Image 1 (spheres, one colour):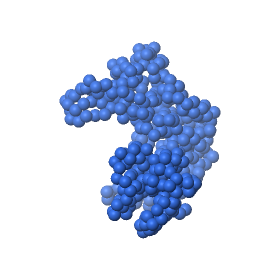
Image 2 (cartoon, rainbow, N blue to C red):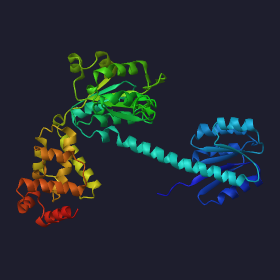
Image 3 (tube, rainbow, N blue to C red):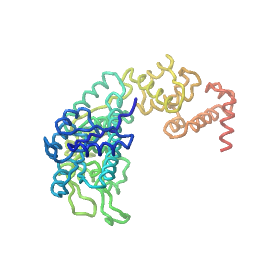
Length: 450
């Protein structure tokens, strides 16, 4: 598809000056130029959505400030450059306040100034388009159907609650077992809400050391304590105007729960080492694998904080309760893994499907993803057999599935695990993995050379 030309409309009632501007700007082959002699004809052509419009401030049928207003009402994305014979500072200031990109006086160097101005607009236009494209890509990535894959009644109920969360700024509490996709749901809510153009800040409460928690959430001033060599902006400030996602909120230390409660009630924080009160305005989404109400009864979680955070509850069902979603997800993970690694796409045999459906998936989606990717590597055929579905039963396999490695190292690790399991019997290992003995020798030789 051909790229749309960078279009410039020129509005100038002086015929000679009109031709001069058209001639000068036409020297750049990237520009498509159209000229008009009055405001009326220009306004009729605004549906063509030019990138830039240059207008003479004093046209026979309309003054520049009125024309600028009408342009912005009908073509808000168009940038307007006002050209005038008068070097009137007050007029220039007013016209810029009204939304003009620039105010240029008709002088001998107008061509250079106009070119520079339009080049700046062109550059910024490209950046805006890229930002808009990225925002669109993010929204598509986190659309409910793409972020949360499945068709079971249990997951459809989740979709329904997620949709309800978009109608207000109510806090959201996401519960569910580890690996069910709580952060993915939080992101999907954020990027489909009114907060989508502001930051999504994620904090794993359980991963923050107690002595750093207050600094991490509220920030600190330079020199506030030993080691505070620079000012630090806290997560609440970072998330201002957007969403603050507090994962594993059930792990929040009881001492800091009071500070958290105050920040949420007062909608303000104070950095460590400062007396300045900083207002905060962000949506709060929390996630937990614990039953927070039970934690309240045990005295581990403040009741007032619980009700302050609770908001709209969304419970993510474990994978074992999602029926055929297991196969839908497995096929998705396999297809994506093959695409990312340049491998031919593989299918899942009936026996392998039955094996997957009969397994309880204690690690939920996270475990299914790892098992699916491993099955692609282990299967030399186009169809993944039940032997390729390695359900994690040993510490070695569990460790393997959680490590981040290159595809080569991943393969080598698997081979070494099998060699240890079958007393270095390469022939037997080759049969078990469905690969040739020479492949194993080649892999081991590469390991020794490294």
